[in-house]
Each structure stands twice: as structure tokens, then as C-alpha cells.
Image (cartoon, rainbow, N blue to C red; front, top):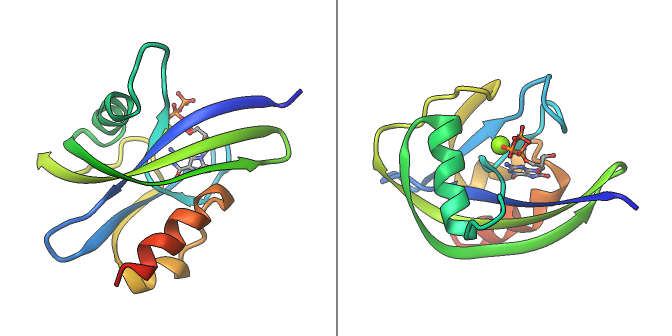
Amino acid sequence: MKKQVHVVGAIIENEHNEIFCAKRSPEMTLPNYWEFPGGKIESGETPEGALAREIKEELNCTISVGEKVEDTTYEYETFIVRLETYKANLVDGQPIAIEHAETKWVKRDELTQLDFAPADIPAVEKIVKEI
Ligand SMILES: Nc1nc2c([nH]c(=O)n2[C@H]2C[C@H](O)[C@@H](COP(=O)(O)OP(=O)(O)OP(=O)(O)O)O2)c(=O)[nH]1
Ligand SMILES: [Mg+2]
């Protein structure tokens, strides 16, 4: 049986309607793919609580978590991920990459140019269509 992980990702949008994207580092699982930053929900956490915690840990800033965008399950070669993505806004600080290889603010219509992790594609497509 493949390992299953339940993960939350933040679609953080700024005042210029740009979305914050983060590139996974070569040392991480799924290396060098772009993602919506976040991570695994720990026991006892709500998805929103887990997401705020992960963003503080990974990007040293505070977000408010808004509406859910997508809930997708994707089977990778070695594990299965359930990825829930949420809209989010910065309420304190600016995101600083602590563990990611690269980060950038991307306009909606340029999102599809990034090589997103396969599990993220449905969320990316939904966000792009919002224009
Ligand atoms: N954070 C995040 N993870 C994603 C996305 N898409 C996707 O397939 N994943 C996968 C990559 C990882 O194998 C898995 C868990 O995410 P993660 O590595 O961020 O987990 P985490 O922050 O809790 O890190 P760790 O404690 O396990 O090191 O989910 C995404 O958009 N955001
Ligand atoms: Mg993470």
C-alpha cells in the first residue's frame, strides 16, 4: 500500500493580483517542481490551522486563510497525496524563502508557464480561469 499524505497549499494573492509560487528545492521530495507553499496536516489540526502554521514555518509570514479552491487526490509513483488548496492573504510580513529554492509572484495568465507538481494542475487551471 502506498503511503498517503494529506497536504494543504496556500494560494496567496497580493494587491497586484499576483499569486505567490514557490519552487521545491533539489533536496525535497518532488524536487524542482513549483508548488503552492504549505505542508502536511498534523493530527488535531484543522486544514486552515495547518496552513497558517506551515506558512509561518516555511516563509516566516502570517496569512489569513480564505475559501477553498480545490481538493484533489493524485497518485505519484511512491505515494498518494490529497492536496487541498485555499486562497490566502498576507496579514503580517512578506514571504521569505527559508527552504524553497526560488519564489516569485506570478500573474494569473503566466501561472501555466511554471512546471507545477502534477497534483497542483487542477488548482492552477481553476485559478487561471478566474481572470
Ligand atoms: N506544500 C505542497 N506540497 C505539495 C504540493 N503539491 C504536491 O504534490 N505536494 C506534495 C509534495 C510533498 O511530497 C507532499 C508534502 O508537502 P511538503 O513537503 O510541503 O510537506 P511538509 O512541509 O509538511 O514537509 P516535511 O515536514 O514533510 O518535510 O505534498 C503543493 O502545492 N504544496
Ligand atoms: Mg512544505
